[in-house]
Image 1 (cartoon, one colour):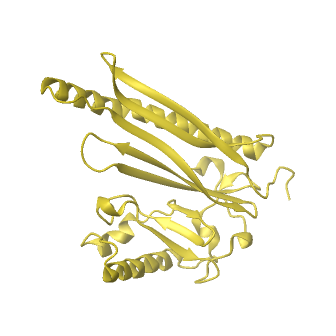
Image 2 (cartoon, helix red, strand yellow):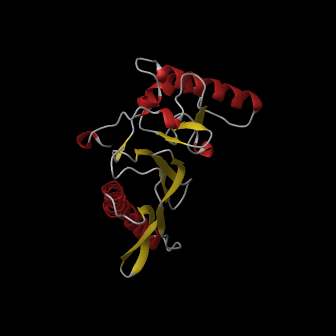
Length: 240
């Protein structure tokens, strides 16, 4: 095992906030919390630290370049109509979902709260091999040449049918057609119960359902236990 390999990763939140104004009136606020390894004394921890610092900066740039013009337009529209002045809100948070056996998994999720309508949620999953310090491909959790994509899509379809029969969730009428098209192998993370994979908000369900998430339990249907993952990783120039 490499000298810098870790069994677990200890982190604390790194927080940042920004506020943008138009004519000295706040029109957009953004808050960010991303993981920061402590201590960042080895190369793997430092690499992960740089990765999420970049994500933090990228998200704030996104807010300034894309959300600020929308916020300014909403402000001027309200000003012209003598309506209450709006202030849009954006936030980025994270949740560590697995941290043992040399694997560290989490998701980051942003929320944009517009002037009207539901909040927009965007989720990203990351699973890191703490030995090499790179993200692990979803395919690494399944035997070579296994049809893991079909397995996951079948599981999602069965869960959707159960939820609709029980009346606990509602999906789009065309979810069967869009399920495969909207599947993204990068949209996954590990939990204590199994491998969780998800679909973007609005992709297969209305806004009320948020981000549809499904879980394949460990030890079933060819899924490797986390400790059995053979260490298949993407190289730096393939990183997401």
